[in-house]
Image (cartoon, rainbow, N blue to C red; front, side, top):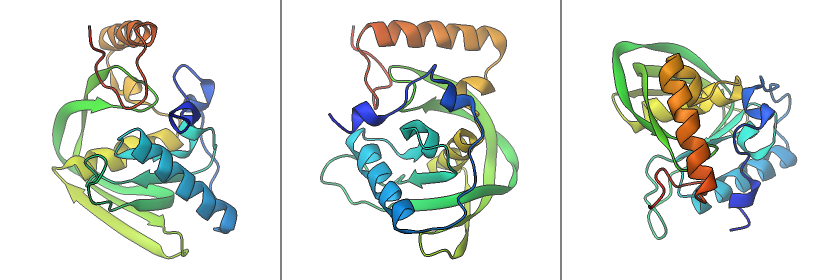
Length: 183
């Protein structure tokens, strides 16, 4: 439970701010990545970005293969991630977010994405995903380091409804990792 308390929840203003690039990948950055993965796994999430744990730096952790306690882990750590290509037919699907517990919203994104980022060894890596959770997760988490949330992708009426539903979910006790609150 301690890990869940470290997740920044909307409407915290940090979620709408641009993050600074990481200049040096040192032991402190590696410790941050380890802490972020621990928090993400504790919340049964598939991605987490720096501002979601109060770190205003361009760091993202992702594991789309993790399916809960006891399952295999396949984590990625992306330092200063940059979307190089976002194209292909648009994909519309339901997205949740650890910073918006209790709700999910319908978001439309490109179905294909190519991302460049540094890994924890400082190597420049390229990630490509098409028509899958990884494509969505890469775009969702990279949005976070640029101060963009899933609600920002919604039309005004849908956004107002999502914000209302989110406030109700919080009032009902929603916690990070929950996309629906039991009635």
